[in-house]
Length: 348
Image (cartoon, rainbow, N blue to C red):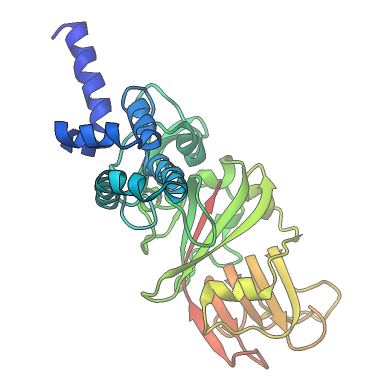
């Protein structure tokens, strides 16, 4: 095959990734589009189809919204002339993009000659999409890392990079585990998959800078509840490894929302953030609750002996082995609870 032939094949492959439903239009359907003043949709799709960018469902959704505004201003005759075209685009949008999110888009890998350091860089480039593992350049090596490209309720969209997955019923990630302080990976294969029960710690823990953290908790087989934390840092390791407390300001209700209706937390203390642990100066209470990322509560009006917590990388009474989830006791607002969860930490 000549270089010219290879170029033709490569360009055709790229175009095939851009809204394949364009090829479904018959000449008569294109005539309807061209005579119905649906210029917004046509311009977006046509420009993307003949460029080096990807025409995503988000692009088409924006075009459809713009067209809907024009329809609101048009008369009955205008709406009648465009109804057939609109129905076709709506059907194609549902088929290719699904309801509400970009879940129906084809997956597309980034070009092999491009190097990305994070999932957000891939997302912003519009050169690849799909919720799956992509090759990222992390710590001088290229490794597959799961990227969440579609929006997560509670965190939003924009390309989230997987950092950790924690099974709260296991001790691997409890508060005192070296996994929080060292620069060693743990089960990197688990970092190639999405929101399953495979624990992992990726080099993104100590190598990936961010301005936002997305934390999620899954209780049993229920849906995952997510919450975003606005935090600028060179890495998650830089916030946690030294053991220093760093406050966040989500509020107890948002932390409880990670668990859902069963969440239970004592009313006082409410110390939240990174390395949330008892205040110094009290008596030595080795069973006190603490969390690498989370919130702790107490029945007394201080933080010397907290006995409840919600978070990631946890420890303390009642269940010293629980490494992620919720423990509530001794006057907690929803009774005594011991709820281990599957926890997920991503950054952007």
